[in-house]
Length: 389
Ligand SMILES: [Ca+2]
Ligand SMILES: [Ca+2]
Image 1 (tube, rainbow, N blue to C red):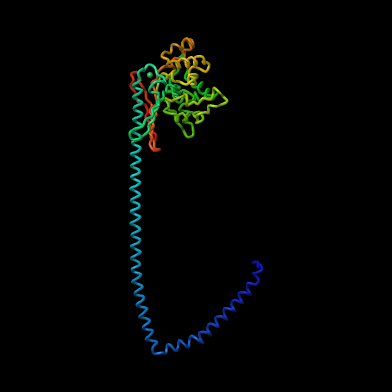
Image 2 (image 1 turned 30 degrees about the vertical axis):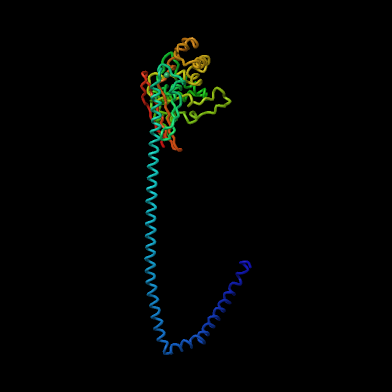
């Protein structure tokens, strides 16, 4: 039956239900008067009824007393159970805390051991640099350039490599003033960016020079950065690392991304971070590249994209043995070109970056340090960075 069909009959059903309830009530009252009431009157008039009633009351009192005693015992039991649970929970928490502290202490000890191993590996690399038997020339065939892998008695694997920072063109050279008659560091920086597929590097390079040079004469100096929202600063000093270059107007992660080698733009698909570096030291003259360790792209950028013959001569000569004198290029390039390039070229290196890593059971620690090796072989630490664990 649908709800609409049920509604008209609803009133009638209620009335029928009320009649039925009234009739049932009447029948119940008749039953009480006929059967229950006479029997009750008889029992009440009986002499033994009062005695039975008293006995019944006594029995009920005894039962109630026994019930109360049982309830008391039950309460004590529940309290004991709660207390036992609380003690167990406290013991479990104390055990968990002790265990967490032990794990924390073990992790700290583990990290200390790994740090010590990485530091020791870096120190040995510094020693190899200082022990270089020939400080007048540096090439990648020398002992310091060989990556070292070792295992300590504690079972820690260490790996250390030394990178010649002068194998790269230092973009902080833009902080040094250009000398008359010499190649400008901006031209090198722009040629390098062109080799990296950036064919409009002029504004970015100019902004980078303003950012790192001491003076405040330029379009992208302090005034420009103060007007930005939010306001920024122009440090007017050599940059400490790649993160800082991202604050230079026009520079972004895109310039620092590693580009795929297999590109249709063959010859212009180099990655800037593979051929440039940032040595964080103030200077009045550029820090040159080492012709024995620089990549082909770095040599092309420094010597000029049109100097392919000179670049090829360098690559051929250094294959035979490390280049000891730069004069040899005076013949290939001509004295004038050689003179222009000379401030940016060297056959030895002073700046090196050491990366040491220690590893055991998947945990590791790493240190990176930038050092300067003086002409007499003394090695000075310029930067020391520990990788957070
Ligand atoms: Ca050497
Ligand atoms: Ca400046």
